[in-house]
Length: 468
Image (cartoon, rainbow, N blue to C red; front, side, top):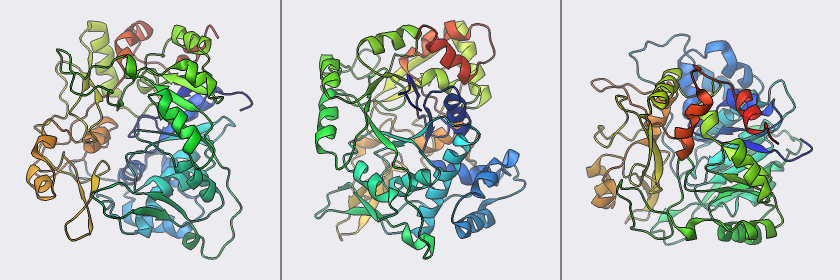
């Protein structure tokens, strides 16, 4: 891609921004993005469902570690799975090294990127949440093995990721600090590719562009000055964007709907962004032709758009949920609320509310069996444990968690899998319910959808760039 993209398709997890969506956008000359969040679980569940179309196995055949592929196929692939059977689970991540777990993550990210890049020469990126730390290094390496061109990271401060990309491109050991509550000494997460190559000498990999997702000009300035490697640009995301939002600077203020209140201090100064000398894209409320024009007039290279792409035909969201949203848009009954308590991360989270559509709620039986959003903490005996305010309350309290932290929490991990048709079922329990998310601009999507039953990612690109 000679020119910078005008559009970055949002990296919506888990599995919403899948390989089909990223591929469709990249074929239109814009930056298609796959979401890394939970891809190991997504891969093994697709395999347990028989790998419809054979796409997972086609990509797995290109992975350079055949022993890893053989082991995963033997364990997870099932030609047919009864609908009443629950999915087998990958082990929860622990701090101690787990070569098999890391290999599964690397393979899952390779598969998604390889499929997204198949059959065209457009650019593909991958989106990771900084908050989800243990899978980061193997996920990046697997994506790089598949030729990823861009890495986007939000929900945290990824200051040391650029240096890790440099090392992974040379197949060297990479390390990142592990945030452990109460730790009395620094803790690291390390990933060494060498043992997987069994003595082979692989050629250096393409080092992808690194683009942090920030909510403030001050964070962008800090990252540009203090990152341990090259930063190639920024996505500047406002509080109207879908998914997780950065908390407001002024805490404790809520409107009549119980939503956190954002003020002038939460708005990035675009004059400062222009002075940084690297490209930036605006996100949140920019998914219109006017939004694109305004962003470029303000000095941005373009915009990142999530909501419009999330409901396109190619996205991983179940078609039945897309239809429910379209019907609610036509009826004027859809709502998007910023829930300050829903996410176990503590970040505000946008929740789509549709009358009559059952969604995961705080009343769900608390089961934490995916664990992506758990927090690491140091136990009294010095060992590292993991806890989540969405897990059973007695377990959370026994691990030193505060009771107030459990109020209103939902299990995003399982709900997001339900969003894409991979809901877990357990004996004696109802199947996991979804929890849809979108930006505030969802309400305006109705004018674009009209009476249509759906639309393509290519139509979104054409619509947004019509006046460019």
